[in-house]
Length: 134
Length: 305
Image (cartoon, rainbow over all chains, first blue to last red; front, side):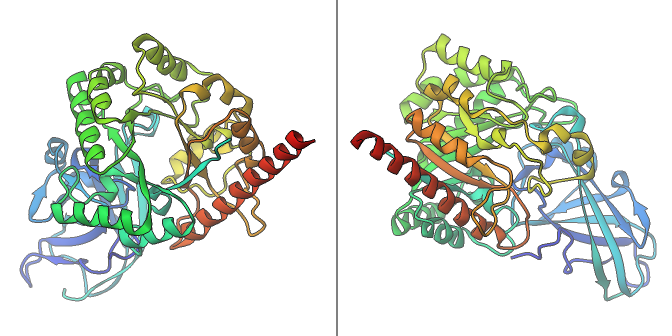
């Protein structure tokens, strides 16, 4: 079972070797009511303490596989299931400082059954989350 | 006259499912309403869709038997805008529907509801729908399934989208395609909380949809012959069993008068706080059962007068 918020406490951590962090990671649950093909996810913006890290630079990891935005668009047969989670990898040399941060996410979903003017639909979430290891 | 059949769609438990509710929990909640039918969302409810593990299939049938529930509708999607720069062909759409027909059949369902991608604000389906469905009519017939696109707000009953579906039925003479009415089309008061994945953009841009399109219940008579299944969409029922948006006091008598005896499958789409849906679904069953009993009692008095 996952936390109700899209952003999960677990999985919020710095990436890369200690002392030479390359960025940070945010774990999100599937925020849609059905299991999206990855090609229907156009990217995820992350904002931490008011600083925006736009989707175009972020990577998307599901299980052991990591995708760029262009690679998500090709993944028509891979699904992000309801009840599953994925990780957004955000490049930021040095990573984030130890402590509690305000984290915001904006998942860009393309719902083909929504009118064209609502594509993509941007599903937002925000909460506090804690970096343990700088 | 036979009465309504009562069911619940697991869409009702959106956001609970996967955070505070398992499929086994959902079975328990559905069965305890007294419902006889369970509706699922294929991609959501079936692990590793479209290839569920065999151990899960065994468990599915054991749960149906234990709770005395029958599978009703299997909701599925034809993701026509499958990539940013490409839409599905007729062949791809047909393959998607065939896959869902076969899985729905394996799980014991009677209906599938493919949700097609749309091309405009009136929810006109991508034109591939007609070819994709027509290529599957024989398969649906062999498997004993009926394919049901839904008539969903903001598309009313009297509309070119509905007309095109009816013309398709008349042209092909098929009994394996029909209409699913979503009772959200009868909504006649504005929504304050929508559980369909609300965003600021939708709130600003879809006022007619959120305010309700107020289809007169009498329009059901136009299409009832093609309607074997109804999704009983609702958003909030208070502790006095008063629905704040959907006029059940007009819908139920009209359906009774038209002789409808299919499923009313609860589709709660309101506040998504944990576990709220469980109670809301129960209130809807209490409300609709009361209205049906009132109609039947009044009708019996008329007959005996």
